[in-house]
Each structure stands twice: as structure tokens, then as C-alpha cells.
Image 1: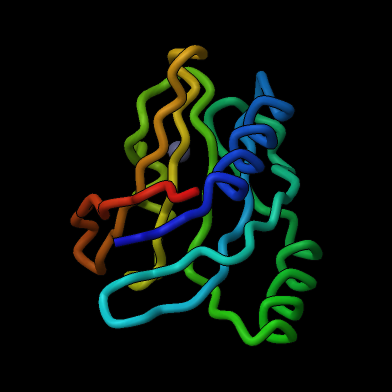
Image 2: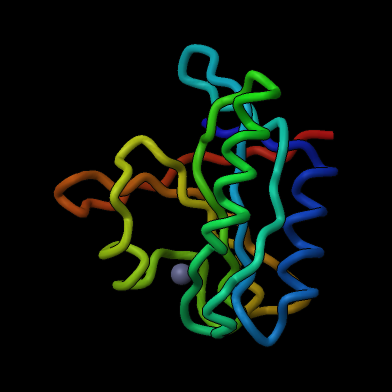
Length: 138
Ligand SMILES: [Zn+2]
């Protein structure tokens, strides 16, 4: 299970809206306790593809983010990106490019602008996709 605060959820949502019509992306960091992943910090990064169908995180931003995560004694939990026009599930490309079986892949769909949908997925070495429960807390 992944636990995210309302505030961090809101910043992901705002970043996704600001990034329209393109996909927005970023990294998530936090702590793991038993089977729970707590998102403590979200990093709103640049999609250098500037595309509405795929994303690449700016490598420079990725590097400084990883440093900041270490500095804060947190763990890199995974990443997030938005789907401006498609549902919240990994695309074929998302699955193809997923190389970390421990990472949580969060996808925020803005297909229905009134009703954003955030889901989280694990993608293993065999490219099997498993949804993780994600809970938004106050
Ligand atoms: Zn995607």
C-alpha cells in the first residue's frame, strides 16, 4: 500500500494541470515500513519530451533529485506521470520502459478533467503489471 498526503497529491495534480497538453512527470520519495510506502516528498520535474503520449525526466533534474533524497534520508520510491487523454494504466511504452521491479509507477489520468484518477502500479521483470493500493490522507 502507498500512502500519500492530500498536500502531496495536490501538488502532483497541479503539476499535471500546469503541464497540459503534455504529460507531466516527477519522482516520489519517502519511507517504507513493513508493507507500507509513505510518500514524504514529491519532486515536480520537467518532461523533456514535451509530449502528450510519453515522457522522459530531465537527467540533470533526476540527478539533483536523487542527491536531495539521500540528503533527506529518504528512499526513492518511484515516479509519477500524467496521462492527459488516456486512462490511469500503464501504456505499452510505460511497460516497455519500466526496468525497476521495486519502483512504484504512479499514473494520474486527466482524461475526465472533473475527475482525476491516480493509480499506482508495480511492473516486474516479466513485464507483469500489478496495481498497488494508494491511499490519500489528510
Ligand atoms: Zn504513461
